[in-house]
Structures are given as C-alpha cells and as structure tokens.
Image (cartoon, rainbow, N blue to C red; front, side, top):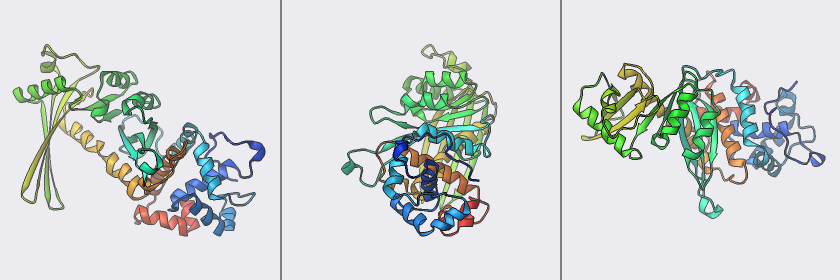
Length: 362
C-alpha cells in the first residue's frame, strides 16, 4: 500500500475533469527533483520510459498512464505552498521532532532564473529558517516583490516553536520588535549589528574600546593557501546601559565583538562585526561557534540548491511553481544527505535516476 507523502495538500483542480491522481503527480515532481531531471517534460519522459518499473515498485500508481510535462507543471504551480510544506514537514519528523537546544538560522535566498528580464521578473526571494545541527529547513516563505525580508520574518518566526532555541539573524532582522518576538516565543537571539543601527553600533564599539571583555576566544584556520584568525570577545550590558543615548533592547544580555583577520598571498584583510544576544553564556567560545554556524546556511543549503540542484537556472516563475519546487529541492537535499554511501550529492541524484532500488532507499 502506497503511503501518501502529500496528504495535507488539497486538490485545486476541477475534480470532474481530473485524469491523474494528485499524489501521483506531486510524487513525480519530487522524483524528478531527486533524479536530476531538468524540467517537467524531462520528468514525464523518464517515467514514461520506465512506467512499469515505477508501478511495480509502488512508487507511482499511474492508473491512467503518465501525465505530460504541462500537466505536472500546472499541478505544481497551482497547489497551496503552505499545504505542500505541511506535508513535507510530516515526513521530516523522523529527522527532527523538536527545535529545543538547536540553533535556528534565518537567511534569505534569491531565485534569479536564467533570463529574468525577458520574463518580466527580477527573481523570487525566499526567507529560510534552517537548523544548523540537523541541516533541515524548518520554515520558508516567499517575499513579495514590493516588500522585503523584514515584513515576512515575523510570520516565519511565528510558525516555529522556539522554546530553548538560539535564533541567529543577519543585520536585516536586527530590530527591537523581532528581538521581543523571539523572547516571547521562548527563544534567544543572536543578531548582527551593522549600519542599520548606527547609534547602538557606535556605542558598542566604544564599550569594547574602553573596557576589558569578560571572555575572549581565538581560533586559527589554515587551508587553501590562506590563514584566517578569528577572535571573539564578549561583555555584559552593564557599561552599555550607562550610556545616556542607549535604549535597552528586549532581553539583551551580551554584546559580542567578532574580529576576522585573513592573510592570503602576502596580503592581510581585517573585518570586525558586532552582535547582540539575549543568551547568558559567559564563554566567548559559545558565541564564536554560533556565529560560525550561522554561515552554514550559505554553503550547506543555498550553495547546494544552486550548484547541485541548479535552482538559479530553473525557469518556473508563475503562480506557486517556484516556491513549491524550492520546497521539494530542500526536502530532496535532506533525504540525499541522509544516505551513508561515499557518493557526492550530485552522483546520488544521478544514481536515483538510474537505480530504482536506490531511489526507493532514498
């Protein structure tokens, strides 16, 4: 008996004219993502060539044959992204059932498309919430062209159970209302402090310049012809609160200074970034790990979506198509990473397309 993956998705089609089951069509789309198919026509062709194999394995029913590429695309574009996300989240529960004790990283990614100008669009922007320890995307939401990440950030946070988590956000989310929401939801925050909060940033810089930190942690990393030294310093908010121009942030307990020094080919570059956190840890090493882990979303999620799955080359842009396919890619990435063989993710995708037993295992 086939277990439904997309049980929470309501069929948006006119049921009197439906020829192919919704579960089958969405499964084909997910299988296509796993099997390195380039587009919906490619998916339809692959399943047509191996129709009996897919039916006998139980992966697909195909009661009325194989839907064409246009049918697959229309279904993917029309189903509700929230319902699709909820279905995939049910399947994720064996990977992560609680966020407590984890770091939740919030960052956005733009889906540029191969030739967006000719399509009359500038690329879709999706805000992702990603757990560093399990490498699972636990929430996502598209950002409207006429707005920015900050407008959808509260709803992304509201969709998560944040009790016992550390939520790290880049400077775009460094606002008092966001800090307050995270605290009210039972989590802690780690926020980059840049030019969008100039007064507070200058005050924080002044405090570190004139006082000794409570803890300092330094690491050095060598590789690929470069040496990178990172020094993390932390202080409590006592001195900051003495400044007359400072308006206290909700739950703020620590201010953090991260210095990076990189030496490569004889040249040296330096960068200093300040952070705010409601975490009460006294060890700079803890915050250094959190700051380092934050950038994992770039090379462990966003990079793979572009390079391994070719997300930026995808031309699907209308209706809900881009959002739904992006959700399927993230789910497929998580499933592929769980495999214990020595193949690269790219080779695992190709093997899924060649070997039905391997596809079933994934």
